[in-house]
Length: 287
Length: 287
Image (cartoon, rainbow over all chains, first blue to last red; front, side, top):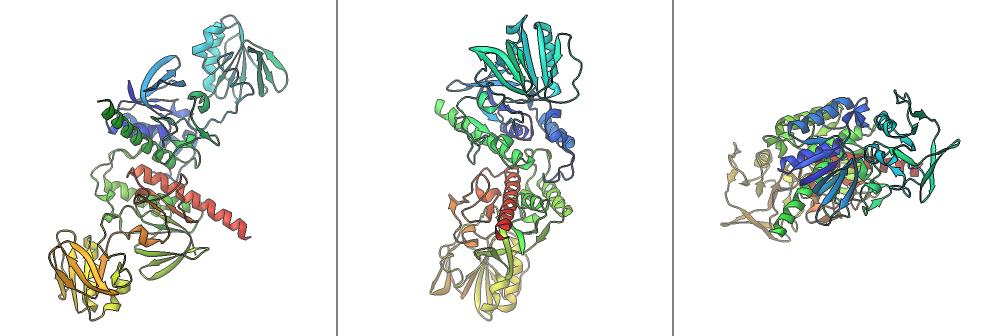
């Protein structure tokens, strides 16, 4: 079982990880490739003290290098849901199930807005993971909404199992896709159905589908962990980065403004040290 | 008038300063030389992400270099007291008076414990500044308690104006001192007097003096700014580093645990950005 599972490999997640490892805890980051982070694309960052004038790429590579040097494990899988098991947490990382004593949420901000009905139909035709739920739609027609080119892998996977795949990319310059894929432009408006999904409504027109896959860089936090307290779209935390759930901490952009590297790094460190202290208290109690 | 006065030139103060300057604010740090900071003496710091394995000296020099590169002004004076003037704040920096619209307290933790009677006799025989109050004791006998070799400058200044100076160093390896100085060992216990100071009580014995100078690396925060809310020895702040006083923020070790560079840097950045936002709101109101 992991001591600390960290969701997100940006500045907050990496900072949390090195602080956990330095205290001899078993830590793992679940995160996207660093090239997907906003920071990576930043031209120049002058306000993270000690690294004046670094480009986003330089900074992220330096952060990642530091973490790797300290043997931080990073798994390039998306965590779809976290279950509260009472005494520990269970993570579903693309259908691999992982146990962790504590969780640090460092999953940034979700830029993609929700589609009407997305939440209501989740698990009843709406899915965040093609690899996990694709097989349920064998021989059927589905739609996939993707907010970045990373979603194309999912589209091509569905191309192999489904009868037809409508692909609605929310970005430009779509790559090469399988023959059963039809690219559809137009903003998604709503998922509709009766009990289960049967329709995706677009700004102009609608598509008859059995399933709608929504592939975002990050899962909305409210979906990720049920019962987590949110305050104005940010995860509610106190000065020790504790959330309302025992053993669950949050750090970085997901806790709200200011959206700054320095804040994320500081909060990551604090969250990890607080998790360590929680682990020690629990160990004492259970002995 | 300064936009932002920052008390303390450690990681929190320097991080606050670069974030204020980057938003085009008139910023000044009041702080000791970096060699006096705890961090400077640290052998190796592995948990500030991006600077793995730096020594404390390397880290502080890198932070200071970054701040200087961005034209942050640093004044090597000790701020003795901050007065709330209603619409702005007035700082007494060794008897130079400076106005500032906002203040960021980043003055670390005071290691020196207080002497009994210190607070009660402050301004009535107890002083934190030899340069400021020395002339009041011309021809008299005084005692000076110093917590580091930096206090020796003050001792030698008093040697020039006073009849006799008892020096109680709280550290080892005392340097060369003036001829009217007598070094006394023994822990200071209490300042006593009737209305004004007339005695310094030590663990073994007592000294008849007209004044007691207490020269610490940092002034106790409760003395620095009257009315500031303190919670378990730390300055009480919310998630935006706001204190209970409008336009006053705090960052770093002075806000409590964990005492970590990353936390200090993050809080410094947040405090500065919050101060900037406060300045903008005030500007709008006054127009």
